Image (cartoon, rainbow, N blue to C red):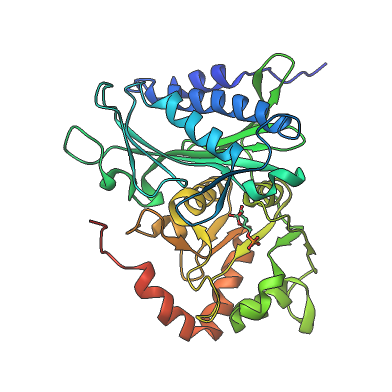
Length: 356
Ligand code: P6P
């Protein structure tokens, strides 16, 4: 009987590391610590409805969004798991305005960790899947302490990136630039087991994921793209089904495994998000890296998200991500119909002003 090998994430990480003779094992240990964070956050989300963690923390994050107690817990946990390991020179969290420096009595490391501790947290109270998003860059600043320069890097230089999804099961999906691999938590033994080796986005795609409640704010090109996906106006291929749950990781993960496109476009000036709602460094870069590694593509409507040089820690970006042919079609409609929006967005996108 053909039985697939049983790999724990630890064994898999160590085998992957052995392919890099000069690897020190630091990146492996950072990823393993993130898996531990995933197990601990999963435990709390499992009982959020019962524990004292349900509901708002009564505080707001850097964007003025109500913080749920679970994302305060997740944010603090990830920092405390990593601040003393001497593997990181700095951290940055979607929940904090400034970068998080390593406490002076702990040593500095060679990596910078960026994370969205609990994306989609507004869905916690209604039991919708949420997740943790992370990205790991190599230190590039020359001083001893990590600086903004170490986190304001394009997606092209990522050392690793991935996410945990707390859904019907808990999974960790990551890439170090050698394919995308998914691990499912077996809670009876507390181990992430390799369940989705070398994930590739399947074709033909099945779904499109977008909040069409915002359609009146979308540009003409994005509305044309949406009708193309639906096979309306005699355009496009086979009509795709619409699936949107309002939790980026859940929407992205479904399209990664079954084929499709997720998009959160920028809207016209009069609306709230001319440059999109999602954060480049805490959400879009990781999704772009994973999609690219799985044979897909991610664009901000103008070009590859991985090529965007960040200029602000919390800068936003439109995001179209999934099957390459779908995302490239979005770019074509935008190039054809949305020159005024492009002229508004491009100066923001390509700004080189580093934050003070
Ligand atoms: P909307 C969750 O708040 C989030 O940041 C993403 O996880 C999700 O894709 C998006 O916002 C949903 O936004 O405007 O459709 O509710």
